[in-house]
Length: 256
Image (cartoon, rainbow, N blue to C red; front, side, top):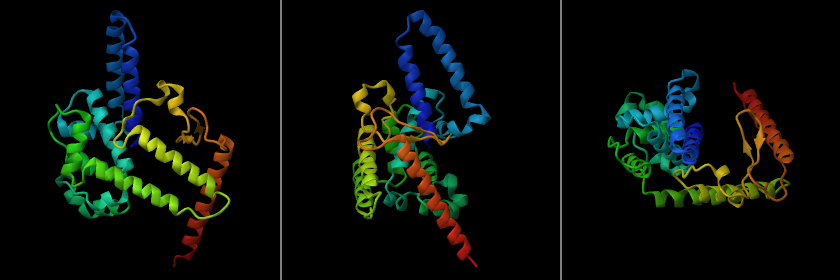
């Protein structure tokens, strides 16, 4: 899910940089950019970064990679932000009807990838729609309410989560991270205004929480949160994983 938005951001950044070149340079670089994009789209080893884009493109018969990734990125971000109650509203499309029990199980688990598939399969076949219009129409056809109601539900769940934080030595730190997450949510948009923040003015990337990459490395964009350091966060994450593994081991030991 996040991989799709990452590729969309890269494409947007490439397009912005192309605009800074002379007309002659732009022609050459645009051709190279197009070749690189198509190579990446059909490279099996990179399917994690393209599978959602292919899903959306097949729905609309869209051949423009830029347009497809903008739609896919918007929808991926929407699904990652979906409030829990939204999964109970989703309609299972005919495309997934043969595996309906499995889909319902994934909905019950609040799996955003299955939400993406369900919403995308309900998407309009009209390829002329803008990314925002296409995602909005797809979400409505999939049984979801309007974006304003979804945003209200998501914010209510985030506020409820903060109220559930128990007292303890880590409580203040956790509340600070949750508040930072809400600010990022409001800043970036509910359905994916995924402009690369690193090309924006420095003061717009203040107060971002550290990002945990798939490699296990922590990256801090802009100024860190007050009272936080990367070392402190990494130690906290490792301790949380240790607790999680111990709980799993305990549960497995209790099974007959």
